[in-house]
Length: 349
Length: 271
Image (cartoon, rainbow over all chains, first blue to last red):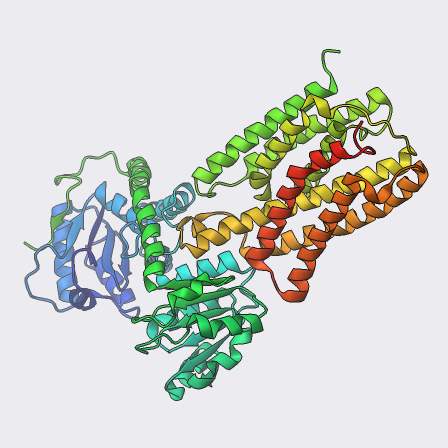
């Protein structure tokens, strides 16, 4: 019987999740203790910023096993305060379905994200290498990875970008043949513009020019991104070579308007220009979007696209759940579980 | 005969119609679907179109380019052949979805019975075939350039108006579409220029032809001037992007709308 005990961003705030998190250094000892105390025949511990979960194969009756595991977690992290619904305990078949849902990114904060699959694989590899897994968990985890692959190819759950930065990259790829030769300019060194610039760089953008009212901040960000910093007053001078502009200054007025952009576009020989305005109040006059070969997106436009993608992903959940239920049913033990199967219950009462 | 060249062509037209219907489906789906279906339907059309051309050629024992029907079929066949070659590159296969309605419209027009009447002129078959083949290839290049331009305008409009389908669609990026449209247009212009030179040679062979007062020849020079202007505007005055795409589409629409009229007015090209 495979059981799961854990807490995630759905049930517990970050303050609680961080209390129960296992650092990489503590994992070997924790796994070893679980085995030595006969709490688990096999065990995998998944600890990420959004969840801490124990996947355990046990021969004990599930209620006893889960109670022991609860005590283990509390003792391990020296946590003695009462908990209500923050911790969940699952038995088969829900535990298997939960594992599959996690692998597919259905339980993630960003629906359908793939990072969790890598983290799950890493956690499993860690336990496997240390000899803490056996036939039950090996089979369940291998199947989970296959289900994740199947869901990814058969549904649109991972299609599209759900963050502002990656939407900007997608838009750039719809305009430019390749991002490899594109010059990016960041005007105003904010956090979102930095993330967006990083996303563009990761897709091969040639280089980044950073311009900020504080030259020191511009230089620091340029150094981080491997680009060059220029003084704020000079950004328009280098505009002729730029293909993508990310603007996020705190200026109360437009930094770039139609009158300023028209001559710059002529200097650029009307090459396409993607303007990403993530500043509030806006940095770029919406009128520039009426110029030929200029494509302007503000933060609302980007967020709307990300929301549409998310909506599309949500529409896929039913299909994913059906696949998961079918695959979990194939894997689950035919033996009826002693406790009320398929119900999640608070671990601490 | 029961199975004539026209029967084969009618089956090809059926394939064009099916492909056009599929284009409507793709449009309603926001161009999110792959275009393998369009490619295969157009390949089916090409097979029957080829049979029609060869059957016609073998029936009359000559290159089938002597009537407006034959010339239209030949030009369309060339256009389709260019697309099928270009479409082997998956990134440009989408051209087929946009080209299908064009192929269908041209085919329906070609089926008009008045267009299948022979011209009275005689010239050396070799030069005539070369002349028509060059024009046919040029029409093909211009047609596909128009299709690429149409795709550009669709994609550009979606991006300008922040439509979700702009990121969802499987269409190539704007820069690539402009590059393809530009190269096809330039290739078409070179072919057209060569065909005009051959026309002069043919006119000399015919002797009594008033070369520069024939409506079709004047029309050909007008079309040549329009495309040359587009090329110059793009490379010399940086008028690329939407204006260039609109120019490629507009000029080819002009060609489509005036081709048959100019041909019928011409004593050399019409019976």
